[in-house]
Length: 184
Ligand code: 5GP
Image (cartoon, rainbow, N blue to C red; front, side, top):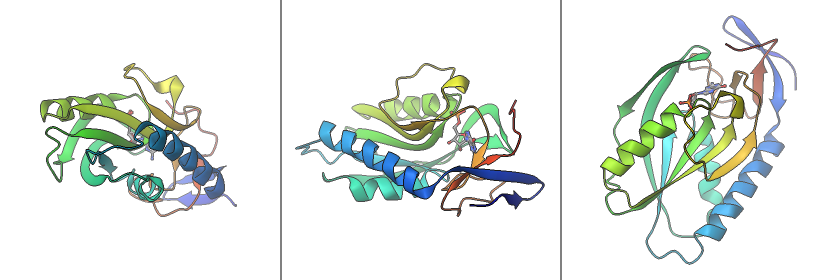
């Protein structure tokens, strides 16, 4: 993998596609174990846009009946969080009386997950579990419990495999990190 340029920034290779697939295998295995024999059709909630690739890969590995629901949450502009989370597209189906597994691409400050959990509880979900492909422990500040983590990474800005820089880079198969980023 080589360096790439996206708009005004240079990104270098960080996590290859095969390693990502391994992380998703391991997360799926843990979820399958916890939901073995489920008869209630749990919901897998994809937080658009970033988690679209991860959710697609995860769903293919889940071996119990589950329903895909989506919503859109927005907090990032450019390479950093605004600190304000907004639900910019409502849930595509009701979660009332249902168990929900949130599928997130990356957890950074934790503000998105905290806001998402509150919405799901207000909408009557009976249980909410949090699953994320990537997690930045150094940036985490809300302390919400995270049930399933694919991989922990340093507090740097990344793109690829669903993650964007000003809407570009989501289609990359691998993950890239901003070159020389000290990030915030
Ligand atoms: P949090 O609310 O936990 O601070 O941030 C969660 C959201 O911020 C993620 O779903 C993702 O959209 C965005 N985000 C956090 N870190 C990064 C990053 O390194 N790169 C990109 N492209 N988005 C990020």
